Amino acid sequence: MSVAVGVVVSDDGLLVPPGEVPLVVEIDGHYVWSLTPLRDGRPAAGGVLVPWPGVLRPHLSGRGRVRVTDAVGVAVLYDDEVGLGSGEGALAVVDRAGHRLSVDKVGHLTRSFAATDEGVRDEILRGTRRAIDDLREHAGVPAYLNYGALLGAVREGRMLAHDSDTDLCYLSAHTSPADIVLESYRITRAMRARGWRMLRMSGGDVKLLLPLTDGRVCHIDVFAAFHVGDTFFQLGNRSGRLPRSAIEPFSTVALHGHEFPAPRDPEAMLAFLYGPRWRTPDPSFKYADPAAGVRRLDGWLRGFRTDMGRWTELYNGPRRAAIPRGPSAFARWVEPQLGDLPVLDVGAGTGRDALWFARTGRRTGAVDFSRGSLGVIRRGARRRRREVEIDQLILGELRSTLVHGTRLARDPHHLYARHLVDSLDPAALDQLWLLARMALRPGGGRLFLEFATDDVGSPVVPSGVSAEGVRAAIEAAGGVVERLTLGRGEDMFDLPEPAVCRIRAAWPAPDSKELR
Image (cartoon, rainbow, N blue to C red; front, side):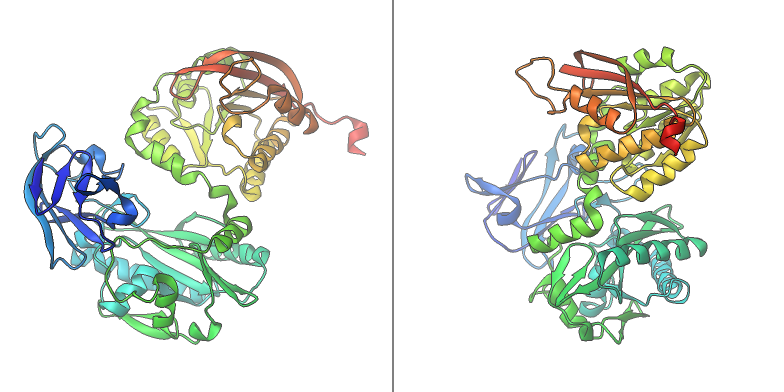
């Protein structure tokens, strides 16, 4: 532990003077994190203790020079060598290839523009320009630079050092959320036809994936913006008053000498996004969005993503190591019942059971809504040389459910889901039964479920899911429960679970009366 001018750096975090001025943390001259003491910390003897972010903790072991300054680097609060964790080796926040990482605005570790060389930066700018041109000429929507990219262009003429992606918006002519969603999917089809790889984040925003020569994949976010009455909405969670005349017709801004379309009044847009102090650098800035606007955007465009960040953090973080790699007891129970049909692991997590099903050459699929999960499964399949068909399924997004259900109706599978039922909200659970009905009726496969329940009389209620409630939902969806057992079991970490239900269900083909 080292102390300098009222600042203490330790394994617990930073003990700093109380204040609302953002601070920047560097390790050996490289930016890693920014914070605002009173917002991010808690009172402690001698000041405010701001804990290290969870994503940084696995990297904080060794010796290195830690520097804490104000946002522009003029006032130095701390600058000294420290030992953290074991105190052995170099203290460095890097990826496996040795690239410097920092905590981005949403709390993920990433390579910021400060750690990007000029040639790669130019690739990002040219790729962003190409995205704008393709959106206008082939998707039919004029896009403009926004968020951190616009802020950097207007305030500094360059990318913000602490940013890590570029952001585009388009102002829709539609005022109905349903039309916004349809437009967004039309844009997706047009951009895929231009060769772009994409990730859908909600009904109104997507990420274009731009491969870079340094091995990274840069994200170019494309957000819908629209008016409903007098209220302006813009994906991320922005909402409030901003007239169309502040956006159209576009102006232009320069970013590292490249010209980009921008809102007609870029200063009004930046004040809308970042508040009246947008000209003052604050790498620790966090949005304070109106709760009513967030609630509306969630309901209109984004409800299914509520828990995605939590699962992605699990699969990309240190807790993943606590999930066993071998097959679960439930997988061993199911495997003798599979016969010759392939099996699809729904909500596959780390893929531990899917990889085990595939060990003997059984045709096996794995789907999950977390991209972190899918990455773990792909790497595990490569390591073990297993053939597993991997795809994203978002229960709660009807389009995703119907696409998978249609495919499975022509390609009979069993469906396998361990601790999925007790992780879904009611809307997503309804779509699980829809998927099962579509997939299992034509081919005779079975649905195998294991979930925590409250039906064994335990004083601990792990989930509130009722076995009889699940049976009733399956039967209401046209299924038949062939087998139901209750007893003790294990959670996803193979720790004791006091009450677990196992179900095997079938969806018989409709009889002639039902078809009339």
